[in-house]
Amino acid sequence: MRSANLIAQPAEGLSRESIGQLVRTFYGKARLDPHIGPVFEAAVDDWEHHLEHLTDFWSMVVLRDGRFRGSPMAAHARQPIRPEMFDTWLGLWRQSAREVFAPAVADEFIRRAERIAESFKLGLFFRPEDEAPQP
Image 1: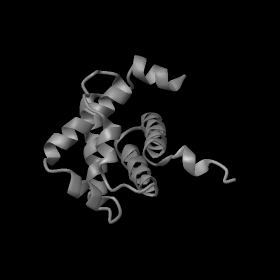
Image 2 (image 1 turned 120 degrees about the vertical axis):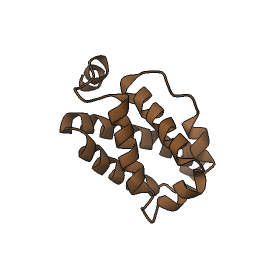
Image 3 (image 1 turned 90 degrees about the vertical axis):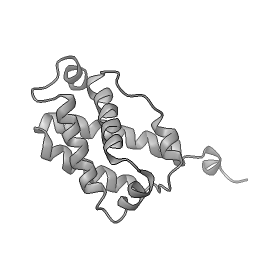
Image 4 (image 1 turned 135 degrees about the horizontal axis):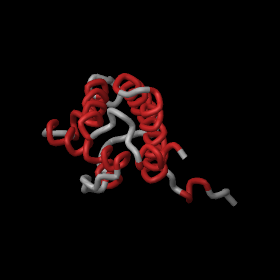
């Protein structure tokens, strides 16, 4: 499986530093986006700390380096996020990943981001009681 191989033997050029470049490229775009930028700007006081923290997160996701500490779901639950914002987030993430990495590595970051976005949408917005049939 490609995911396991990417972790077991990181692709050339894949490092915490290159992941940091991806994070900075993405947030450079996200902060300017009219839909999601205001949410980020309102939530983040110290951008340098936030970028390092998110670099730790993505390094953990891809390199399994164990640097990240935190609860992403809890942090996002406090924000005024709407489900459709994930489409914007993913679009900017895809674009950024393709700018920073070769196609195979970019595709791996995109796959993982898609899974994370789906997990966040379910965790933040899915309510089984809303899906129950009405009597």
